[in-house]
Length: 225
Figure 1 (cartoon, rainbow, N blue to C red):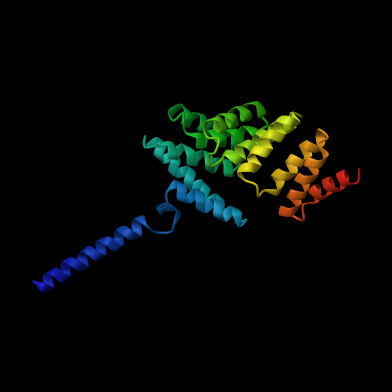
Figure 2 (tube, one colour; figure 1 turned 135 degrees about the horizontal axis):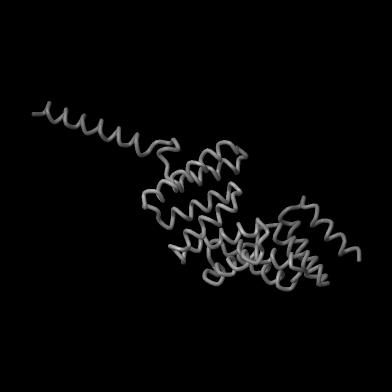
């Protein structure tokens, strides 16, 4: 009896090991779409572009498979748009984003990604629509700071500098540690003649990034006048 119990235990351990190998390995085939997206993003941050694209492509493949099996969820469309965005396939982001929002109209992760995609193809009107839709729904959401920054960029390009100032300031209130954002705020303040606030914004940009040449030039320009 004891021998039989030992055989059963060994058999169960073999099955458990086989299932673990199938579902918990480290290859892209055993990872889900979100895991592949995150792995790709990590490789991209290390400038390992080829490896990043391998994981991005796998994430897209998994999402497409889920759609084809009618098993797609809001996460499917969200990860699809995130991944295509990282690959700079902005037209595809818009296509899949619109498709996802037809099913999940309250999926604001897609809404914000759509705003970025429209910005990068130069459609600032549609970008503003999606960014404002996101910030109106989630003014303190995970991507709110980024959305407000893009709103500031759109107003700056439209030469609506006071509007841009408000948007940049809001972004920086949420996430104050980005030198570029302080620099952009400084430039719009300089455009409307707000000298002292512009100097302060340039100085803050340089505190965060002492090597920021454009900020140093802007500060020098105002301090020399």
